[in-house]
Image (cartoon, rainbow, N blue to C red; front, top):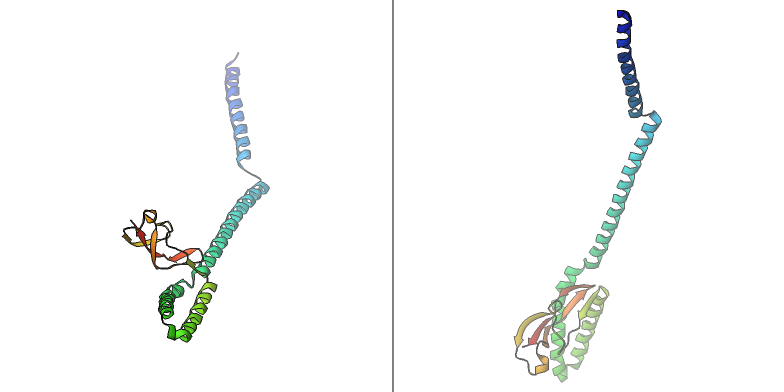
Length: 184
């Protein structure tokens, strides 16, 4: 073999390697480079995902604000109702004292009429009395114990002996706990 043949043979493997490397690079570039349709398809998928997330977030916002609005309407009158509770208590005290006086029968009827009207009006707004009776079991979640006295009998230990002030609910929310005396 001549020197020229050796040079050619030596150069041929390099030329083949370079050609193979260039072809692999071209194929890799073709894989990385997407056609315009594929690029638009990817953008469409990304925008659709973004839209769906935004839509879901907006739906959650609407539900949350609707729920908050309903709660606000339910308890919007709470301040007024709480302010009226002492007036209701005064009516109850007046009725209990008027019952003792036999001469004030007409006065008692008038006060009772006004009391019933006030109770019905507040009832329409969602106010309800928490029923507590003597002998009921004391529940710290519902009742407020203002004092403990020795129980008159063993069966009244840990139970309610007297109700000092009635409790009220506005809807399902307790706005004033009943104040009770419990037996020890």
